[in-house]
Amino acid sequence: MLSVRMAGRIRTSLTRTEARAALCGLACGAVLAVAPGAAAERMPAEQAKALQNPVAYAPEAVKAGRNAYLRLCQYCHGADGRAQANPDFEAPSLRDPDEWRYGATDGEIFVSIRDGAGHEMPPFGKQLQDDEIWRVVLFIRSIGPKELRPETP
Ligand code: HEC
Image (cartoon, rainbow, N blue to C red; front, top):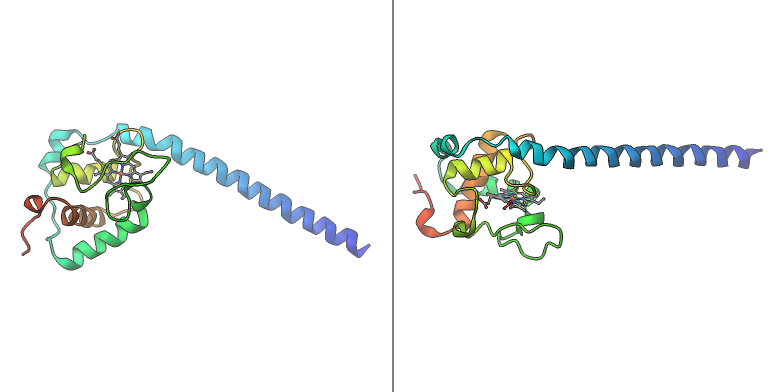
């Protein structure tokens, strides 16, 4: 009797786990389905170019940007920004603006992060506040060409 009841409980909990897994699958699918659409609503280049980074280029801001970067971006762009060794996505090196397709001004980098770029670069406007995105822009400047780095205040 007892063992039957236990078996019943185990079966119930397995079913719940399976249901949760199925729900998660649905949610993940939804995120992937939404990402390219959101990227299509990217701010036009002229407006993006006009945006100015309101955060000063200072060590603590770069460090905060780096932390966000390591959390959200390294899977595709690599811990050092060079984008090696990801079998799923062909992300560009973030150290080499000459190779970029969506603009290399601060504002365009901001918009690539907030709104996404192309079909594979997801938008991060929901995970990151604007000022956090600007710090990530500063981190990208810190690993990019010296001549594009802002002056330290
Ligand atoms: C799921 C993988 C993935 C993640 C995560 C990701 N990216 Fe990307 N990113 C890409 C791909 C792929 C491209 C190239 C898109 C294209 O060229 O169509 C790209 C493009 C970019 C660009 C534009 C480069 C250009 O060509 O103008 C920037 C800037 C960028 N990513 C920054 C980031 C930052 C910062 C993060 C974290 C907040 C991040 N990415 C997270 C895959 C990713």
